[in-house]
Image (cartoon, rainbow, N blue to C red; front, side):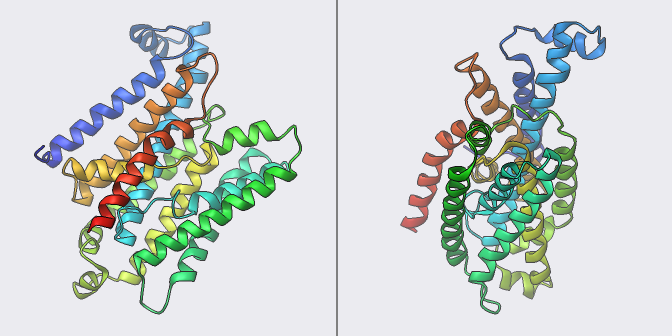
Length: 326
């Protein structure tokens, strides 16, 4: 398939994002048509359908879209930083660091308003741990970073199991569901959208440097890019994006891995196009996944992280096998 032109790719991403959001708002246990939803959004008459749209489906759809966008943007930045197509907040242990921090907050019964700041602390701590263990002077080897990230992620998984094992039985169902990726309580998407907007703007300001960095940090330094500052900015922004996503919906894997690859396959190699397209497609992907999670076995709900993992694991193994053959 020939690559799309940038304008066509962005237009396609907008269309798919609209379809994903629309599916999330229209589909549910109660049938509400598109015309009725538009009517309810325009003329709020206080009916039951109004409450379903305004207080349940729309906030959840917007939250799912924002979380997908956050993870996709974080994944795109990490893949440039590591010059490795397997870079992803979930695989590198950043999601695990944020998750263990939020689980501890749940264990000690901190209010939900604390989840975002403690997740940020956990994500930054995990990032510093991974890069501290692999940083030797100016030598940043992506393979070492990736392997260290996998090991650190395994360590976080062990700590998560420990926290769950000592948690009261009354807390366990909620903690387990959240840990598997759950948007059922995501009713306030404002923070996620604010972080996503700021993160995307900051990344776009660095789009030219990211384009150069894809050819190697040495080449980027030779062309005048402050690579050390660029690395620090990418680490920090990726960790904050991941923490915002985890604090809302738990550890949802593989969205950050799959989406940037999909955009590059469609022709989005310029980061001025790749980054916004990845945000739109990541949001659309998670919106559709959450819609399926809510409706496949309705009235029961699946954790959305289960569906993204079912899709992401074979894609990850495919990418790993391709990399191994090079």
